[in-house]
Image 1 (tube, one colour):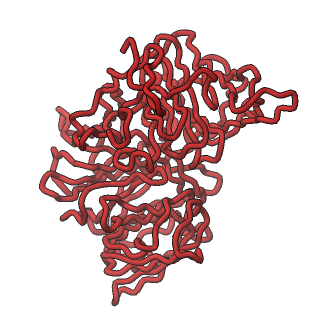
Image 2 (image 1 turned 60 degrees about the vertical axis):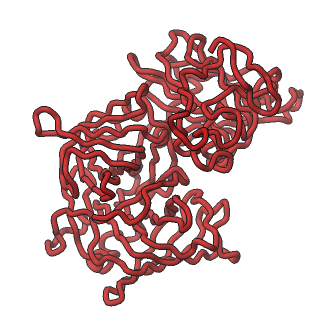
Image 3 (image 1 turned 90 degrees about the vertical axis):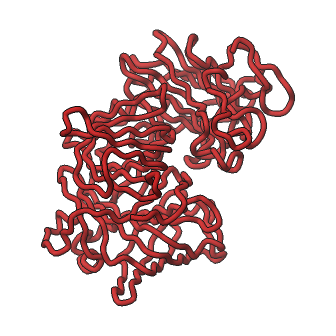
Length: 528
């Protein structure tokens, strides 16, 4: 299968999917049950289309959640690709008309979630729209399909110039039962390699130069999406998420010859390699469009729906793990507590608000929580999707902790994260939206915010008895942000556009007081 577009991806709203039709076995003529169909992921591709938002100004706003949109796709391929949610191990093709005619029987009153993806004309970006999808109308004689939807979460604004698009893929996600928390998992990497294991019965799948955020997209009836940093938490929670059976997945990307190869797999045994920024799986092959061994560029791994982590951790009263302190420095201390901050936390598939981290008064003593091992946590003070994030991955015995500050979801306040004494980077200071010690805002570094040449995410074996300390709005004596992996000038990542010139992050840790040069960023750190 020839590639449709230049293989470049834009990570938006925490997700980026690009799928084509593979050469799986044809099952369009085989009668299957309604229950079986609803457990399938369906992919429809088309030559192009148009979208019409209900907003009066004809564009998506920056807060486009729940916005109604209508879509019309043209040049629709009459054959769609599908694969089943676990524990089934099936993959194949069927007619678009079959899915549309049986839509009500398949989905009932629970409308499915879907993802529409298409290249943004004049750029190397891919637009992704995550939506609740209404029943489509399909005209096979004209190869058209139309449907309405409701935008979910904070889909990136779409200008009026891009309401018409070419080469699109519509992915209809499988539904899960009422009361079940489940998300489809998406991982991105600059490259992927599939090769046979020595025995030949299994394959080894390695995602290299992985983009730092694993994205979770709710399956209906859930309507949410979020991201978590790829790290120990993902591996530690594997057995919990897939206790009822190993997941199926689709892996696809571009070969050196420009072909789009697609592989349908069952995955097992994920292993994170923080030194080489990669993740490796063992896999069995269900279907493929391509030969093995193979090396794929700009690859995407889509893992079928996982069980949510049901129990909300009680960080305020838990014991063990790592001690985590939070200080509110956003304002002056007062008897009336006029300057308050409250933190939200995400861990796995959950978002929650620990009671002890609510209404923290400026200038009060720090609040202490304990972070259990084997989990990944993100902390923010404003609205998720527009706020500064502090992310900490707490490893189990034998693993490495990871920590960073991130503006990928937005910037609202500065943060300082002091790591346990002895960690590779003792302190991260990010005072303004131009701080290079944090994952940057898209508007600050548009060419590398999603996949920087080196990542400001720091890993180190746990320090026994160590304590993390998060300062909201930084510490009073901090006048400058610490250096980061981007240098100290805009668009220096990569310097001159050459990825090979990027300084390795291990040469950048700040071991003392930064040398000040004016502006937002420090020039250097002593003791590097």
